Image (cartoon, rainbow over all chains, first blue to last red; front, side, top):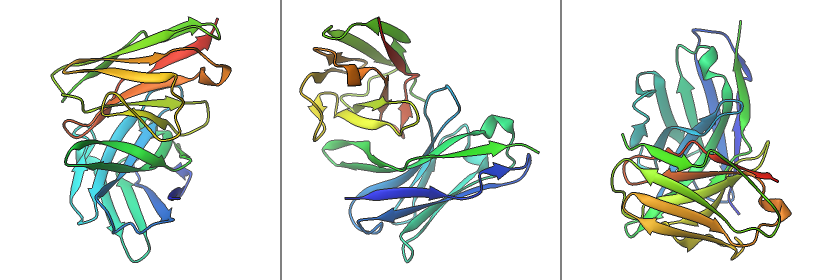
Amino acid sequence: QVQLQESGPRLVKPSQTLSLTCTVSGGSIASGSYYWSWIRQPAGKGLEWIGRIYTSGTTDYNPSLKSRVTISVDTSKNQFSLKLSSVTAADTAVYYCSRFSGAVTVPFYFDYWGQGTLVTVSS
Amino acid sequence: DIQMTQSPSSLSASVGDRVTITCRASQSISTYLNWYQQKPGKAPQLLIYAASSLHSGVPSRFSGSGSGTDFTLTISCLQPEDFATYYCQQSYTDTGFGQGTRLEIK
């Protein structure tokens, strides 16, 4: 059973960089045709896709966040990470990591999720 | 960007009711459409993938249909544990979610 767990600072100051790590257990992050993704959800609002990384290191980002986002992977630690720069209060949200699974003939979907971690941007 | 619009935004229903939630894409996405259920304080859970395929372990009272731009999620006989928020998600180009439909007890 694949499990994902987010970790990182829960409080970030405005203009600084938010950094989170997702640790994957129950399977190798380097095996299979998966994208490893970040999604966030402000309190009381909907889900916003942030971006994803393939096991090869290829990344895709939400155009609305692309200038501030970097996602990386460390296969030796079975982890992938998110960095979001120049944060403001609008970046306060629950951040989820998730596995994006699919195949050539099957549309990709998010099948495993972390429990989510609330990150607050405040001075 | 492909915009996903769900309707209604909220819905009140009773245990045993049949409910339908609609998701519309701003352009054709074939069947690259998935549905999720989210309960308060929890991560979303996959219900339906590829518009109409039931994810493993999901009760058969959940069903999905549609292709192109118009999709529906139907719950045939509401159970108490079904009161939650539902999201559609497209994976045709990058990915994105609808704004959600909150299903409340009448």
